[in-house]
Image (cartoon, rainbow, N blue to C red; front, side, top):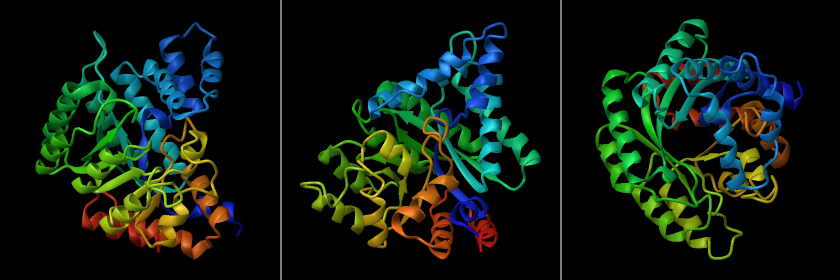
Length: 334
């Protein structure tokens, strides 16, 4: 069995996937037609999604997905289709993350979350081989008030849908806003797990604050890199923390937060024995899949089938799932 076939067949765990960034071309076309049944401009729209060359431009691509998910019906369809596509790629556990959005006259934040949960429930029946959870996101760029609203929303929904809503995600453009750590403490006290994007850009003070806060998982950590000048202290802090890191190879290379796959921080964290997992970040935006991320890791860093299988198995430990659910997942992988 060649590497590509093995990675496709390997049961995998996806812990870092943004819903709106995961929308495939087929899903975007469907959503566009739902909104514009008489228009043929969808190809021009999709062309715009292919042209970005930096982290900042990448965030602009999300505007296109957001423009097509402005009703509960659209949110339901985009969630359902995304889960199916991950299932078709051999993913057996998926944590989607998304920032609740209100669209005047069309959808409230509560209806946004309800639509995602309804899609989860439909997929539970239609695709029983994949287990799905939701992380409510807070977007740095939207400011303190919106972050507080979303955290309160997550806490309220946790009581109602604890089997689906398991955590909070700190994300959004790292060049704006702050980390809202006092709000994250409130969410943690309420029983939500915390995943925080960290060190996507160089910001030593905030990075130290986040590491000392000790989220349950960290995203990217591209600027905590032993080859970067002045990063030795941060790298050692990260290793000492033992906080699992969600690593998105293609995303980081395409956004140019790392220069090449070979230079990716995966190499240094993996060789140091630090807890890591592979993830897609935004499979639609970056035209990737979790199977492809495993294949890239295998070919770039010389990982064979057993190392890749162990990478998938160890990812289960970092999932925001119950202990019983984790045992079921491990049995599928092994």
